[in-house]
Image 1 (tube, one colour):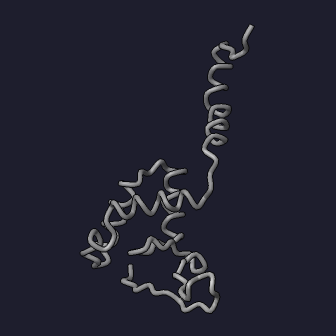
Image 2 (cartoon, rainbow, N blue to C red; image 1 turned 180 degrees about the horizontal axis):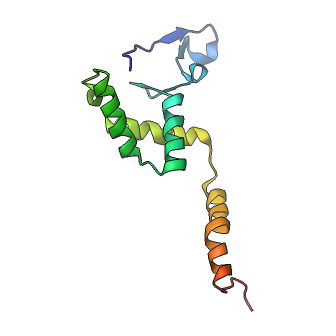
Image 3 (tube, rainbow, N blue to C red; image 1 turned 90 degrees about the horizontal axis):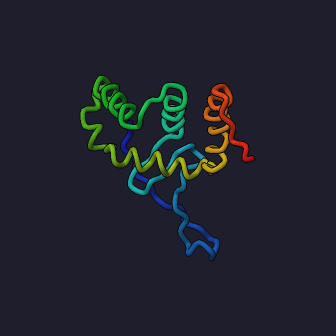
Length: 125
């Protein structure tokens, strides 16, 4: 956990009005304007969620305990749960997931087999 100052770069291109804001992606950082989140932490949560069903709040609470053990006693002030949640949803937008497609696959994998085993059919007569 580091406190950082994010600035802009001077830009000679007239389309950027002489100012190019620091994006962060090239350094695997998600720039949320007033704070940065590492893609590494966001991906770590993603795998905890996908593989272990860890919630956003549980992950944040454990992270807060880890930071406390590392003597970062003001972690909640440095990164509030609200900022963590907003950062996660912003990261999800970057992943460009088609949720309609994901829902269709989920139905095929989890709902349909149960109905097939029970003898029910979705076919219309």
